[in-house]
Length: 193
Image (cartoon, rainbow, N blue to C red; front, top):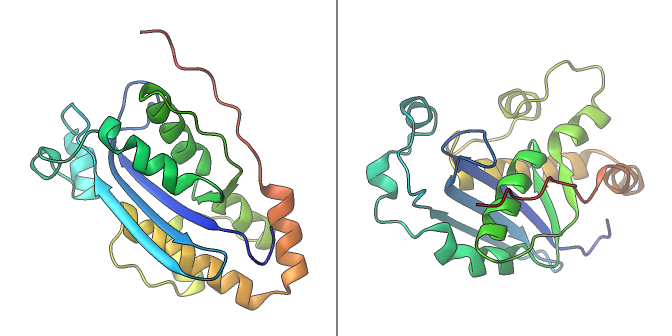
């Protein structure tokens, strides 16, 4: 990590946890450019299938809310452009990266970027703590949630966490931890359809 690296905080809402069979219903991205400019972007995504009732209860996203939304394929170019040239930062990053990797592949695009998981970052800095889920981090660090289980609001929480952590520790210690934890995930290929 450099002082002037583009940071991309991202969160997804989906129809479930299966990378192959489930689909994205909402994308939220908070981009912090190298000059410190912050840009927030989000979109509902029509998953092309019903959202299970328990997911609707968790996220508050209903079938009606995504019915007129664009498909992921219609958003693929925009999403790919927003993810280029920066560090992909997510909570349980393998989940978000995996969903985007597969969705972009289905749309004919590749995703290959360095990834940082904020769960791993929290464990690195607070190994004595047992819990590192987002609700715990909100309480532990005094983060201010606009909404929970909504993509842009959760991406913004990750940006708040980043700000709290960078303000509370020396830059060289924070940078070394990020350098040690950033990776380029290897995911299984999409099955032939």
